[in-house]
Length: 290
Figure 1: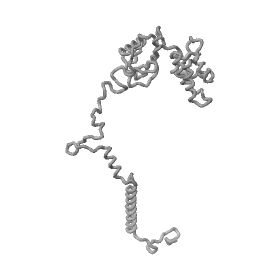
Figure 2: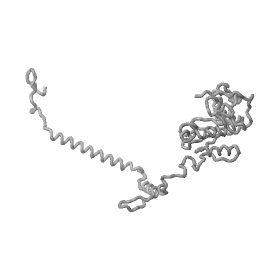
Figure 3: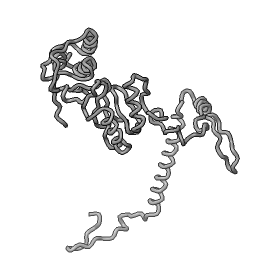
Figure 4: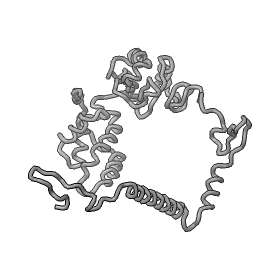
């Protein structure tokens, strides 16, 4: 993990606005009495928005005081999570995904546009409009390459449409969030190409019968209801019939075992005392009954 430090230049102070204080009260109220420190992450997030997209050191101390926490504890949270910016960012903060799927789909070309239109990484443009940073996977691999600008995703980028996007944002023109091509979400570009037959999505469908002629199958829902209605209300799952069938199978198996045992007994000769041969031993002859 990279070392994250506070910016060298810091404002002298930071105070909660009435709007931020109202948000803080709502966040703290979600937790039991004495557990207000649990609100530290969401309150830092709201404080970052109020501070212009980053967390100055005085703002971190203000959050700690509001939650009754040691300053170092809140500083640990702010420096651990990369969602918190520790240095100033532009009005539009561009986070460029540079992980493998985006890189394979042209993220390097998008990076060149950032360098051309904004400047080097972490640099805030002269008018304060833009800054950018390369980050790890943002979870939109199907729409690679992509960037996150403030809270929104802009996907399926090319150098041309990304340059236009930045120009539109700078000029205050409306922009479209999400894919920047003809796609909606992550569907195939140009629409679906398979499973296009409307019959696939209908409960009634025609299937080929023996001999090649088409026959209409009954409505599956109606067939299911008819089958359910035919079952006995007292035995809706046919448990009684199943039990009877199982008992019959058991009786048949038992009868078969008994017949085999009787046949084996009948085929073996009867051994009586008079039929037994004397057993010869080293000291003489011993009666088998002994």
